[in-house]
Image (cartoon, rainbow, N blue to C red):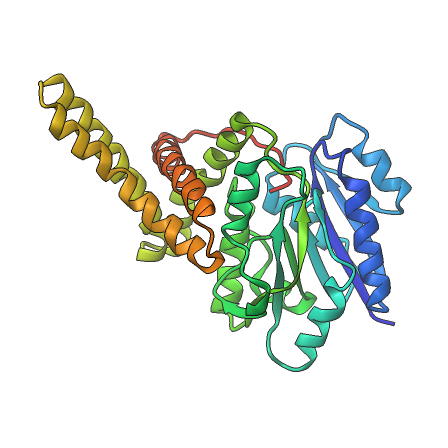
Length: 322
């Protein structure tokens, strides 16, 4: 019988880790695979490690490492032919492994990820933000250049071929890893025939903004790793333009030109509107478009701040769950 090793980085996830491990075990059983659970703990101060051991997981305690290093250390002790990477707050559906192995057997793809959704009790901004990446179920699967690491499935050989995750990135290690897989010839597929649930949704505005600030903090490192290209530069440049327009609006207002200030401020909303329409049109939901418009406007400003702080070598430590 084939074996799958599921590697889960964790930091203070006692609320979710039991659900995550149980769902992973059920998915492996449904696929008729032996299941090896490896939890790589980043120094949790809650009961997460004890709960993980109760579910039969092999727990490695490695405080102080970045997310890519945690995943690599977990993989180093893994013995499975298949590798699954999931975050500690993700509940995978029971057919997760079964359907993706079936796709791999047909030769369609090599690396897979499922779309994510939030539980019903999540606040509107967390649901809208997650929904922007969720495609209508009728769209099935699509080939992509990269995937986020909330859930990834592949054969061990692909991980070894590219040398694992970049251990120097605070965030964005998933994008960088799967971009290298794509460049190495792996066919990457995003699947939404079923979805995973993200239980670690943002419970308040401060948490949402903090996470977005953290997620945007790796642009400089990604540019250094992959070189300057439009795909990686597009969003950081848009965020800097938004800050520049804000500065011009304030200057115009102080100089006694309120109409000019209003025009400059209005222009800052245009990129956010374009992004929100692009991501929401497939859902045919005007409310979602308006919600994403406001969230993207805030995100643009957070990204600009994160980029400047990255250039100033800001090194805030964030939880390792990704």
